[in-house]
Image 1 (cartoon, rainbow, N blue to C red):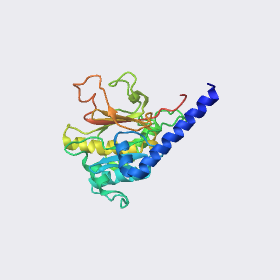
Image 2 (tube, rainbow, N blue to C red):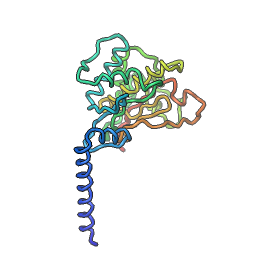
Image 3 (spheres, one colour):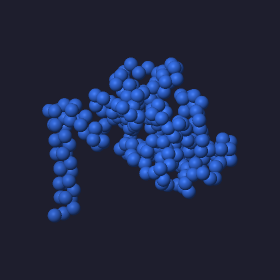
Image 4 (cartoon, rainbow, N blue to C red):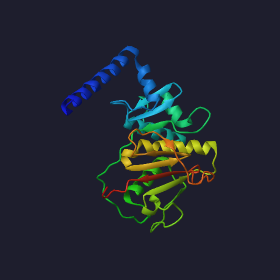
Length: 250
């Protein structure tokens, strides 16, 4: 069989498969799409972000996810929040309270790592301009926080050998001691960072035995394997780690 015939056959099969999915969606309705999203399968033209609520998975575009996470963060501080009248109350409740009976990830956003960013030098704070912008934006929304992982002139120890802290590209935000309430507060920040990842050129968010990566297009949270499982610091149980893309040659 010639290569042209094989290619045409594959294209025909793809068209038939898409047609079958579309027919199923029409016949069975949103339940089909909801079930697929619940399993973490990306759909063609699907939402940028999803929130797992008690009523099922709700899709959001990135602007909605940014407003929702900002509203929850500001409301927790008793501050005026952006308008969320177009959003499902279940989304805001789940972002504020976390999963039933426990703290944990409920919001995911598709990853997209820019490849055309310039490499940056450290600023006076010991952070690159991109990392400094993340710190500034966090402070504006969350107020003064307990921060670490950077210092004027940079840091040269205290982290793994290839840590982005040494490049001035990472910030740690501490939530100590490790309690359920502090974990919930940490997840409010972690969700806000993921919702704003494209805008702020965020590469990784790590917290509470989970990590999110801009390099993984599906944008799900994944288990984080700490080098020392008994160490709550290395497991990122007491702090949210966020770092930004480095830029320069790929």
